[in-house]
Length: 464
Ligand code: GLU
Image (cartoon, rainbow, N blue to C red; front, top):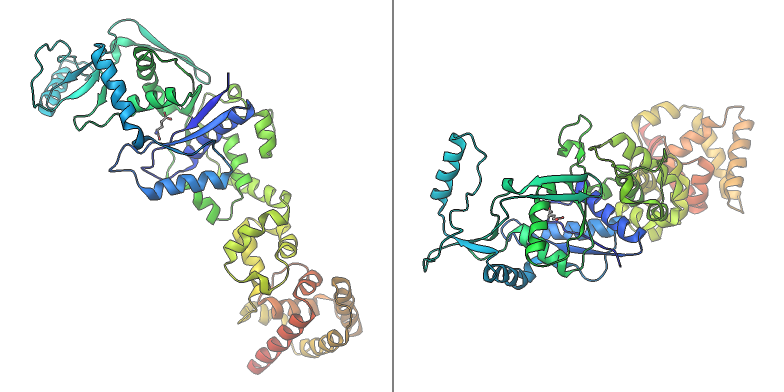
């Protein structure tokens, strides 16, 4: 049997951490077992579904590297199949038309509440023999009144639902649109989904879906419901806790590998290990090691993993994203991969790294005031002039040569190297922070170093 899983987001909101984790677990399960993973956009709620949300889902999944097999399937385009399933059940007496008005239903529920019962549809249209013409109706499922439905969940274990507690579910609304539970069953069956992996907020839908599979004579898939993600305080996730569109993490400088690693550890574990490559996750992941209790979102851990993957990932793999964040013409400056190499050990995230790289491509227009005040004294100017002269005379440009020059000029003046290196750094970068000065100047090249030093000296001296 080929394992087939799916991710079935509704494009009514953004793809956030929770949805991305569900997608990841489904993807990992399929890839681990050499199966297939399909993407189904559940856009049946026409009013609340937006193209923008669909784009964020597709973009977010691509960014995380969660590739799906075949084309994405749009549920809205499959309405005929849903209607056919409803008609089949109607003709077999497994579903019926219900003509109850909203007022009637409200009254029924109110009476149930007052009698201390759980409000649910009482099945009053089940036995209608004369069906009124021209009156709006919904189609309801004739659900069994007795017995129980078991969900054999691969994460949560066996969960029992007494059938008497499940009322006659609406399959088709009065406007002819199918409901979620009907559409999801028809689609999962037709797409050959063997394992339905989704958030535990759907657990209560599952016994109803199992009954629908049975009524339609379809094979019931396996289910795995993943516990939800809570905020650090144990409460439901909020925007403050990372409940933001997954693509925002990209804009904030997170690496997809770090986010994937982090998401995997939200509910899944493998011993005490914390860091996993994508290949390791595919190799090690199985649904059995997903925990039953809610996971907690931990920003500090995500940030730590991001720093870890920033150091582990080859600079060349990050170049395109850094260039995107920089949004300047990097071809006119030093080799971006080498620039990234010089910065990645010290950077917190890609935004931080891109900002650290910016001066290589955009010469400073001003100089940080505090850094100027601290590093430029009367004795600085002759040191810089001396250094400039030496640079001009230097034939072979290299980090090593630059290092020796700074060393010899400062030795000669009997000051420590920082007295010269730091003013140079301010002049070429605009501030007090850059990669080691020899690396920085080597990357900038002789010509650009000279140009920046001269421009900087004349600007600052004119302020003296
Ligand atoms: N479309 C549903 C949602 O976004 C998921 C359906 C499912 O996984 O069964 O919550």
